[in-house]
Length: 453
Ligand code: GAP
Image (tube, rainbow, N blue to C red; front, side, top):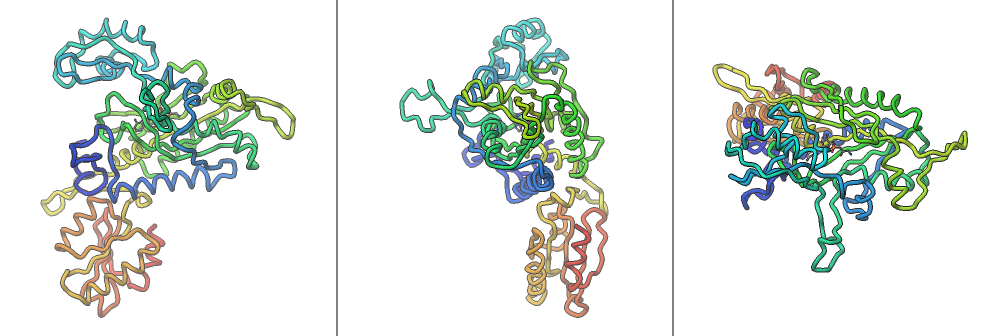
C-alpha cells in the first residue's frame, strides 16, 4: 500500500488535496497521469454501457437536487454509519469495522440500539487501532449526507439544508419520467450516469478506496417485475466480464453475496477486489425492486407508472443497478499493475497497466538531449503520433532514467531516435513488459501502433 501511495504522489497520479495547507482529510486530487487513467476508465465504461447498447441512454443530472429527494430515498433518516470515539486519542471509528476486526459480525444497517448492544458485549476484545487503548464512547449513528446552504441565505440554514448528492442514481430515478417522455426507450431499458458523489465517511484511511468526494459510475436498469432476477443475473455476468476485459487479474476478483438485505432488496452482490488490505468491495450490483420509484411517486405525488405500449399493462418498473467508484477501479488497476523486477542487479519498478488504461501510450525520446538533429526528428515523430495517442516527449536526463520513469508510469512503448535514424529512417521501439527492442521504419510507425493497440 505504502509503495503504491508513494508512487502515485511521486509520479503525478494522486495528490492529497490542498497539500500546501496540510492536506484535507479523505479528499484527493488526480494529477496529470491519474486524470488520464480516470478518463480512460470512464470512456471504457461509457462505451460499453451506452454506446454499444441500444437499450441504455446517458444522463448528467445536477449534483444538487431538491432536498425532498433525499427524504424520499430514506437517506435523511437512514443513511448513517455507527460511530464510536476513542476517549483516549479522540479518533473516530466505524463500529461495524472495529467489530469485524475482532471477528464479531455487525452490519452498518443495524439500528443504534442493536449495534450498541453488540458493541457493549464485544468491546472488551477491541483496542483502538490508533493508540491501543480500550476506552470507547457508546455508539451513535452518524448520517453521511453532506449538507450545504446553497440557495439559503438565512443564518440558521442548518435547519433546512440542501445536500450534496450521496449517490448519483437518485438523479436517474427522478429523471426517469422525463426520459420516458422525451426518448423512445421501452422496458427493459437503462439509464447510465457518471458523476461526483459526497459522503461524510467516518473512517477514510485507505487512500482512494474510501474518500469523502468521489466519482460514481451507475447504471439503473428498469425491468418488468417478473423479469427482475433474470435481468439481474445477466447484469452480474456483464459486470464480471467488464473487469476481465479491462485486464484485471481474475484471481484478485471474487463475488460477495449480501446476507442481510434491506427490506426492499431482492438480491445484492458485490464484486470484491484483493486490495492491499484484503478483499473489499469494488462494485455493488443490486436488485432493488420497485422501492425507488414507489418512494418518489409517493413523496412527489407524481405518477411514475409505466404503461406497456403493446399490452397496455401498467406497473411500477423494478430496478437493478450496477454502481462503482472510478477511484476504486483506478486503485484496483494500480495494485494489479505494480511490479518490482530485478534487472541487471537493480530494481525496476514498473506499472504493467493494461494498454487501454495506460496514461501515456507512447513516449518519444531523442537519444541525446543536446543534438538538434535528433531533437527535430523526435519532435516530428511526437507531433505525428500525438494525433492518435496520448504521447509524451522527453528530452531530459539519460536514456536509462527516461525508460525507468516511463516504466513507473506504465507507458507501454518508448520510441528512441538515434544517429542511425538519420540514415536508415528507422527508430528503436522498446516494449515495457518484455523490455525487448526492435527497429521500426518511421514510415511504418502508425501501422505498427495500430496493431499494438
Ligand atoms: N447507488 C448505490 C450505491 O451508491 P454503494 O454500495 O453505497 O451503493 C457503490 O456504493 C459504489 O460506489 C461502491 O461499490 C464503491 O465502488 C463506490 N463508493 C462508495 N462509497 C465510496 C467512497 N466513500 N469512496 C470511494 N468510492 C465509494
